[in-house]
Image 1: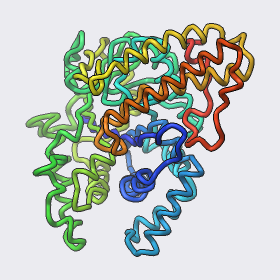
Image 2 (image 1 turned 135 degrees about the vertical axis):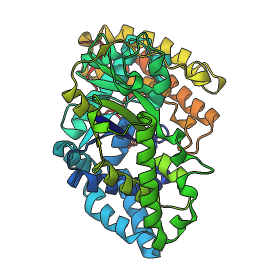
Image 3 (image 1 turned 180 degrees about the horizontal axis):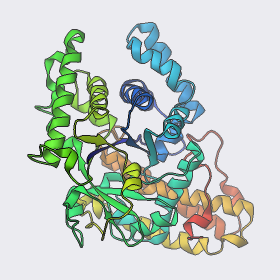
Image 4 (image 1 turned 120 degrees about the horizontal axis):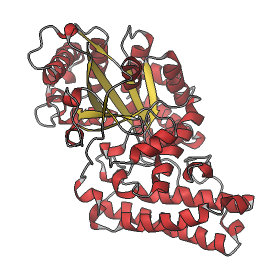
Length: 453
């Protein structure tokens, strides 16, 4: 049986240090996310045997759960409603689904089983450059898994790596938290130490037992071509013809996906179970459909996934349930270009690794610390994680120039060392976090996770 696995990633950058969510979050909630979430909600209600994977970052959940962010979105929603500039259908969805609590929506999908909701790492970083330190690997992976379980009330089945960045050994931190799978780019997958018989169409089972899937970035397919993709079709600007355009393009996308995965196959039902994994984000849709209609195309594509001929749509977790045994090996490392070593030509990751050495030293003494000192230590963890985030390098990174992103990272590292000095000087109480300092990012931190306990 041929399986198509779709992974949708929800991520939004956190606001600057000590700041509340800004207008970009409100705009994304009302413009970018609702068409995708509405289509996912419809899919979850009538998936048949189909399922998919939704990866949600801790920064996205922090802002979705933040009361101040919620009030900001509500005010913008009311302003648009009064101006008559909001789509009536999306308005009804927002009022009935998002407003009562977006995380409740995710929990409902997870419980229903059609959509497997998993986390990304704690911050959006190039993981191979910082997770050579085992403590950082545990912080990025273990704390994200614990945070996800806190918000969704269910332990995650796997984890999604930002930029699909991977270096051998990361799977050990995943196994410690009971995670079953992760994804790497198809290019890195085939450069591994051993290639499965069907290549990228089946996972590798790493020595720790965690499965690695090779992933095709859908933004590189013709559908998301910024110059000639589906979204450039003028029919999307006309409500009367947009539906037909979306159906045609959804069918073309699915047929192309099947053909790329299994060229020339006519009897796909008779093929040994294989899997082809594709991922993209709501922001990819928004950029690829400048005339609107990205959400409509996505909805039609999900409908097509529920009725594939000779193939089936599956979440990665369900695939592993059916195929628990596979080829042993590790995928290759993801090079990452200049982002891997010197983001914006900086020594940011070197500085983060140096700070991690000090944090490891402090963690060894965690059981002898007073409660206020343990709180300071947890603040150090958050600062170090946020210093590593490089989502400002993404097109939807909040409109932040690289130098501004690096400046913010430097502020987090400065705060980290201030906290370290106060901790060593016995004055940790001087650095209590100020009230109302933005969304609660990783509100609960188990220090034992970082120490491998």
